[in-house]
Amino acid sequence: MTLERKIPRDVPIGETIHTDVPPRLDALGWSSWHRRMVIALGITWVLDGLEASLVTNLGPTLLRPETLHLTATQLGQTSSLYLVGQVIGALGFGHLTDRLGRKKLFFATLLLYLIATALSGFAPNFWVFAAFRLLAGAGIGGEYSAINSAIDELVPARVRGRVDLAINGTYWLGVAGGAGLTLVLLDPHVIPVALGWRLAFGSGAILGLIVVVMRKDVPESPRWLIMHGYTREAEAVTAQIERTIGVPAATVEPVAIKVHGPTNLAHLAHTLLVRFRKRTILGLSLMLAQAFLYNAIFFSDTLILERFHHVKAEDVGLYVLPFAAGNFLGPLLLGHWFDHWGRRVMIPITYAASGILLMITGALFWAGYLDALTQTLAWAIVFFVASAAASSAYLTVSELFPVELRGMAIALFYAFGTLVGAIAPTLFGAIVETGKPANLFYGYVLASALMIGAAIVGRVYGVSAEGRSLESLSADS
Image (tube, rainbow, N blue to C red):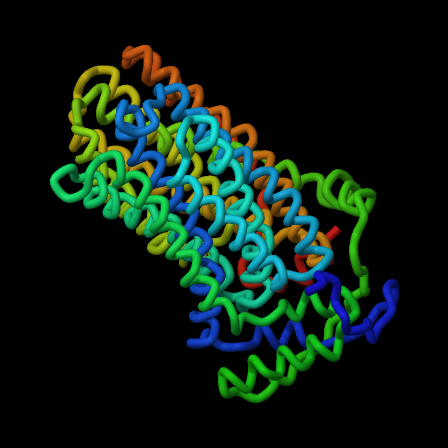
């Protein structure tokens, strides 16, 4: 099957058309169809959370001689390579999702993830394991561009903020699932240690297979179809959505859209660096800060529990569950306010609060006031807020750039944040190996400073995007 579309354009590139498809999509009430669609697409975040959770919860086990016998530094390196893979996948597949459509990439990226994560469980040594983690990351990174683009282009504008944040928060359902799995699979009384860690990666592949079935009825984005000149198909898809929901086509004012077709690097560069330069600074700041914060804490938390609080390797999953609960509940409960009070209020508040709370946690740890339980509770409080902040970064870079380059824009911002953030697991793995609480505090201060800096940028350059259509946001100069 060729990736190129066989249906010819019915509107040539460069022509401006007037269409009511985008406002009809925004006029739809929230429905069971929307719920099924965002679950089928948004489960990408669950997969990523599951993968990250498996590696971090398996971390102490993978140090053992009867498994891969990794060092703490090698464990951090595999986490960093997974993140580097996400960068490669986001950039490569981000270009393709803008060129070929959102739907075609749903399955290509998922297939890559399925194969790589399954093979991770068969790795005989560090180098093979690291290579498969790189490929699994590429699959997940590619998912983000296509999935986030499609969701924002299908969800009504008035609920886009809370829906995006809730979906992004499901990452932590994957984290909790991974923690629960490892509690069983790493129990030596149930499964031998040398086998349990391999079965854990197979669970990710099984979930991926379920996702394939869930996505079969998700349509192509009508907004993407219009932007590429497939207006009849866009109309047909929109009409089918309305019939499925059971509502007539809304009477709305048409909007003017110029057919772009595939974009080039010059158009992308001009949009990001000239036309929307302030939005670019905003997106880079938010993505960098949240990526470093999360990679620093999440990929080292189990090592900290084992090294400093003497938690047994097979018990670390118990401590990840409340941490994951705080992260999941934050976007779910705070998301409404991003649509109500607005982005320029909530983004600075959540970023600044996250940085301050993390710094306090680091100081308490250094002073010796925290044990395994209170350390975990402190992390849960920090990331109740930080999870909403991080989710708002993905919302920002998805909704503030035009349809014709949305996938590549998401990929670039994601790649930037992830690539810089990929330093964090190796850095914090090395910090943990020193065994000095003071060094960990200084690392927390660095992450906190980045979050507080991003809060300032968010207040200065933030855009009041709540309730506005993607077309109106793209029309801003």
